[in-house]
Length: 126
Image 1: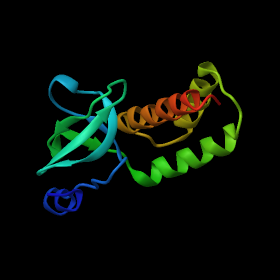
Image 2: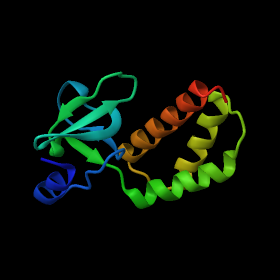
Image 3: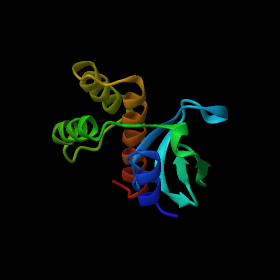
């Protein structure tokens, strides 16, 4: 089965790299990104983990893509190509979230995206 099957049968916006927050079980509150599917289940890499875990599509909360897109666009314009410290990144994130209509799960997922982006920059030596 595929992400298309999951979207159709569970009515969720399942797609690769979609940010999510787990809403049940041992990983409640943890954030991560969809990496694919395993049958009718999602494979998700949680922030800080090296291997994906498997979750039912209704066991995660999905980030509002329009909110995320607007936020990331504004954040990208603000930080440009600067080599940010964690303190600066957290300050910008906090300011933008105070100005938005973000829910708690949106904030968790956006924070996970920021951490992922900063880790990728560090891995690339930037």
